[in-house]
Image (cartoon, rainbow over all chains, first blue to last red; front, side, top):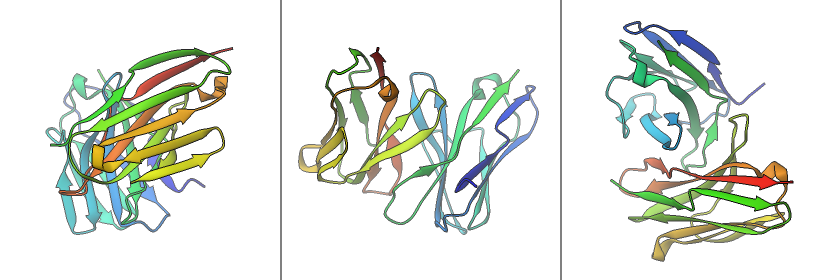
Length: 111
Length: 109
């Protein structure tokens, strides 16, 4: 089993719908991150969390929210999806040293 | 915020060639990592290298934190080296991990 699991792997939704992407990890890490990848723009940080009670905005948090339900679970929500949120979304974890481990990604398409 | 710039943005090489990828950053960092994204989208951590030089087979990396850059060397390229290479830095102000835009490498057989 993968250490960092993202669900779903692919999702197609319509403009205005609420959608949640989920991430769980078995590495025992305290730190979890959500990134989005767009062609030519690299990975941009949406939100990050250093423990269950700590949530921080990243570079591009507008239009997104997160929930850290447990040490092992960190979910990303789009309250009202719009087409320019179509992207590949990655969850990652790290220990305090910061070495990142990524999930397989979720390809989201907003029509 | 901190800026992370990678060069070149694209690189096409023949199999067997050597290459050097560069990552410049605009502020002090606690750590630096290099990743390879393969054609299937998987992100693999190649090096965790806040300073100094590390080697792993045909790949090596050097980070000079005082001069705010890191280099990734790929020797004797193989077609399986194709993909996008990212560097990511941990900004020492708030421990955010910020990525560069990547270098797309294409190795021709």
